[in-house]
Image (spheres, rainbow, N blue to C red):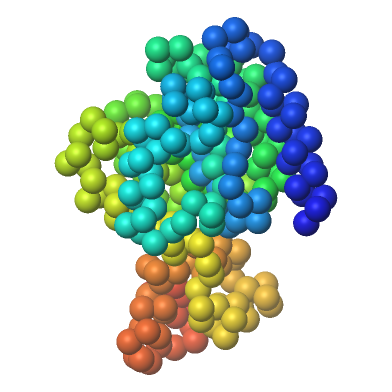
Length: 253
């Protein structure tokens, strides 16, 4: 425990003193990650806004207020999660990040992920999601307009679960997105813990014996267990055979 805290503190000192790209010339503060170092959930936004740059804290501006509302509505506390940015310094006039800036900052993000070891990485918005999904070799659409179809879906790649979400700032521009956004953010509560039935579920036994692919366990039992047909039937007290898979199909072999 102390080792992780020390390692994160040392990394943050390096981040605070970074002058590897042009952004250090226009920043007030470098934003390091903050939150629960032992969380299952790691949120990754694009970059600090003006308020965050001025105060040196994550999500305290208009987007932060929206994020707080979303978390409150879905029953997740800031104390339960770790938050960081793809780009650690403010982008002038809220422009899009340049590729060399992403390349410079990604070394810090990679180190954060390695230290925090989140069960689920939650990138927020287009640039953070594009980077994280590419990083774990998950196919994404070429057109930015088609990217929204990835939000609210859980992915498994290179031993890591990824759950892209719309950035809270999207609700500042179009409040009609709120119902769908709240529903998507609601999965964070699900991902904050494993399925309560997992310790006694036949899926665990089959996985331990090497008879069931790990992706089933990660995407359902330790991922979106709420959509598992077995879980739903167990909650209703309905019979389901041991050889029923989480998606409801039967695997009699």
